[in-house]
Length: 97
Image (cartoon, rainbow, N blue to C red; front, side, top):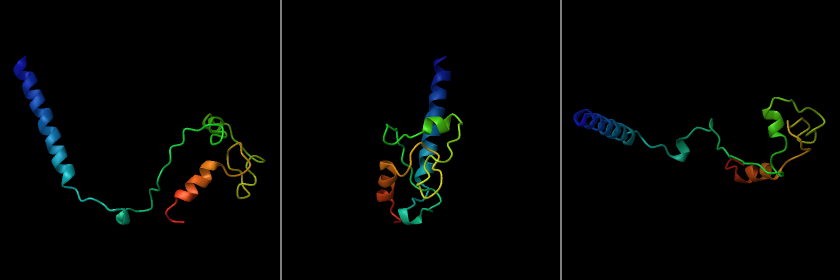
């Protein structure tokens, strides 16, 4: 039994070392080489100032006009009539603006 466990642990260690070596040999990408196809993501665990209808939208209930009609003249899909603090935060963190 101990021999089987020892060979299993040896296999796990070998696999870990092999994957680590393979991953370390991959070329590193700098920020300038990254494509803009994957924009940065902000995870917002909302409160009353930022979560304005995400639960309703997550349950599959549509939020249509008039909610959000002044948000660039289209429904924002949330229970707010305009931008939120999080919208301004994202705009200020946007490196392309």
